[in-house]
Image 1 (cartoon, rainbow, N blue to C red):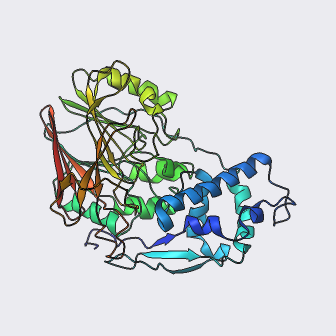
Image 2: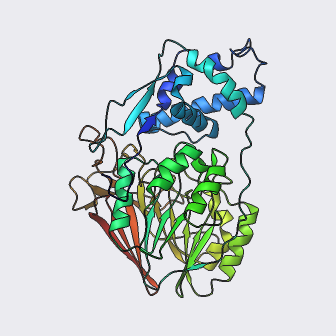
Image 3: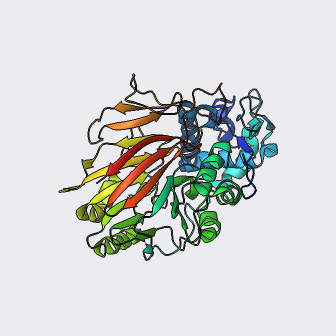
Length: 440
């Protein structure tokens, strides 16, 4: 529910990736062998491959998250965003979604006539333009001096939150009005592509506000970069007083480094590598914590293990904890040594359940931990290969109605600095404590 200083949740237009990938005509209507429907020249082979990959990514997104699926492919996400913003251009009718949030009708869906591939034909001129867009806009300089934080600082971490819907607003409201936070960090993803409209309406309008003098910091992700990144650079970063896509927070005992894994889509680029090495060299005896969007591990299939190699200077120093998003889940990993020659046991945490509606994972039964929130539990998922064993959050979603038992819970993580120790508290949007741990 909105408050006097909190806007109403965004009315989201859902573009079902399964509907896009299943509609009759399909790719053949967009790039037929005898030439596109707009009478223009045929798409090149490389363009046809990109289009085919986009529709395959849409199918995979549908398999993973159903109607709410978002594709891990730039062109596929751009297609979803374009249709969501301009459904009338593509012969789509905007109708109330069949399943609504319990505290307001905040979803609508762009519906197609599956027997008429005309929307594909209407998409062709836009596709020509989209395929020629630069992959990335110019990024601000990748450098940031450490901002001071109190010895007993309290931080709120939330990822994959940029939907603007009721669950996301509930998380933001909880952080703003409860907990006396010094810093709030979004671990990235504004849906679908971080367009100007999405950055303003789904991200900036609903960001939580820490206490007076506190900071909000933003991690760059793949979905902010699918638009090229300019709205994120020109609107989101200035809105929170952040000059770069990287950031640093420190006191005498701790150094937090916020990384940009969006620009190189799951990797760290050379300019950022230089900043990282410099920041780590100046860390002294401080304990090091990493914050970013992409993930080295997952209990599912989505991971970017090459990130560990990119972060070699950090692991040579010793990383106490690493917090990320990208995977729509909450996964709390057992401490494990990471990186060549590492002697520090790192605590890895996926906090990708901030606001995105995601399907519940298949977790082992019975639960390892039963929380104080009805039906919400944590389950142990055994490690495999380099991935350690994890506790995975499971349960219904309180903001999406009883009929949506297939969607998992949203929430956020609280960090409390206590000297060289750290307390972690996992919260539901209503403030129910779900789990608590200590890093000594």
